[in-house]
Length: 284
Image (cartoon, rainbow, N blue to C red; front, side):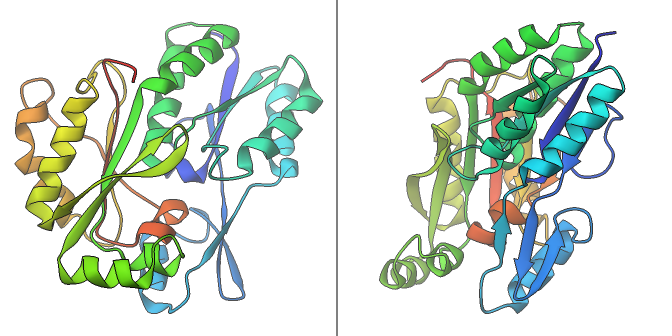
């Protein structure tokens, strides 16, 4: 078996000890004066409980180079090579931190910018693990990830504009008008950045717009990893979406993997959001 271990960050929303060859380093989330390590002493549920209680948004901090360096050192001392997959470098300095750390271990540590986040980043990590399991060496895995990541689509339907307003990403006037009209924004990750893909009146139209966006990019490649995610404490909306969108998947797979979306993205979109991440059949 090829001696490769993978490191990622908690923005991938991979929770629990999934595999021995996968290390998830936590982002820092700060509420007021209190710092928490995402997924270590702050679960996704605890994050949303605090989020709805707070008037001010929490802040998220990148992982410092030292943390990556220590994780890589542990792997290389065990005789393995390290592959680091981070959230988009356009959304966080975490990618640069990983690059700084990897430079100390030339030829033993490799860094890939997922150009994505949450379940989109998770899909790339899962794909890397699959490639490793198939026997690919680290250079081949890195080359394939750099190619395939361009096909990952992350599309999300938000329940509220309130948190985008709080974060200064939209004006109070736009947020107020959107909430009055029950506007549901559809966002995606495009070239490593969050982009508005469309707006819908109400959840039903929002789900339809999600379906349109999936078809627009060539549909879902079910031979590669795919995930659904939701923000908040309730999975009711994602369950409804899965039921309403059966035509997209029921003839191909028996079920869909669902994950909770943590604080890195949850801070900015709030509860009640649903997201779909998958490899498309075609590159835009």
